[in-house]
Image (cartoon, rainbow, N blue to C red; front, side, top):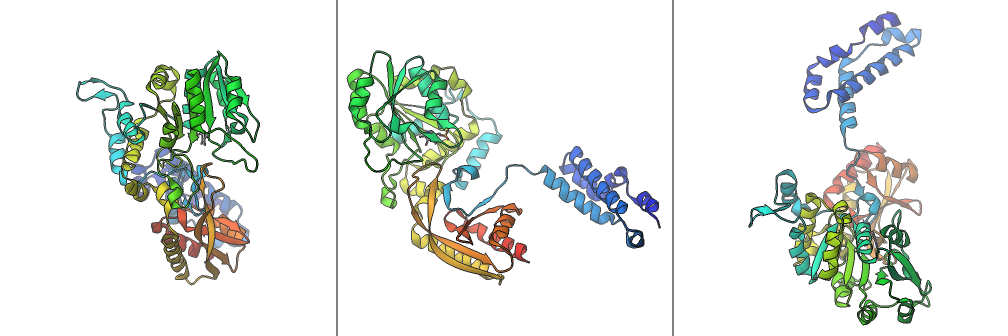
Length: 467
Ligand SMILES: *Cc1c(COP(=O)(O)O)cnc(C)c1O
């Protein structure tokens, strides 16, 4: 046997295509992907033959079954979505990098029913004629917020852009220097204002802004008083900012709309669950804001969206703005958002069924029992690790409540035979993509953001990695 003979034994692409397993594979996967995998597999064999030493040639044989196996695996891997499920062991509930808020399992059939079939998206069933896509969300959001009118767009950045572009284009909007927020990658209030065509008039100082600062800046070009929630930072020490009710009185005196960008859409006062007080959407409206904007996928716990609520006279103008068409939401989002809002009709139901709210409001006993369950699951595998349950803190995330320290229970693991860094990396890269934290040279999993049905997967994955 020499190399030439081995090469001649390599199966051809056509031969492999005629294999029964590959014929079945072709029923499920695109031919281009299967072909690519076949060619790669043949190429791997060819390279192996090329690199053989003379003495190894006689022991080498082409294992076609193994090739078929590899082709199947490679086809599946190539065809899998780039966007994939991960297990969030970080304890950051609204993790923007990991998909922000999760949609409740409870509503998946309803939402999928709308997405996969025709619907009355823009059709009025009573009149049998064209309707408005926004009408579906109006009823439930008005009912929950008591707002006069509602408009939903793609995200909160879009909501702020639309509000400013409608009310303040070529005019002035007054905002406190303490509230020139940047959130996430690139949402900066000053830049958004510039995009919208509004002229930003900054008043006060970084740490102190008073009502007289706003009043002194008002002139005939002033078109809005803007209050921005400092979602992801706090100014501590000697500070003063103007509350929404004070700003609203000023707005009324000069007949200028008051806009509040709340960031997170809070509908339940979480202070009764041990959080510091933050204004809910209803608080802001009751405080006199004419327009309030917030995200759908932060604390609200729904899909990505930007929700605008408030006075009809202003929201009607926004509906007529051409930008609205560019920022509109699709039926999938609308169905998920309506179903999420509906749960807020009953606070207990919201806490039970909206994953974000549920995770934020776990009590310590529930977390302790989750931690025990995860600990026992991993412990039962008898692995070479030190494993413990520890006290720690979770975070709200999503740029919300940055200083809040929420007590939680952690499972900490130190593997005996590989480094913590290598362990973290393997867990992150494995098929189940477990994302944990390394702290104090220990691998840490916070049970707050881990689902119970993920405990076994985690234990099995760790076992797989350490064996
Ligand atoms: C998060 C946030 C935004 C942006 O919201 P997206 O829904 O991410 O576009 C805008 N303003 C404030 C105050 C925020 O906290």
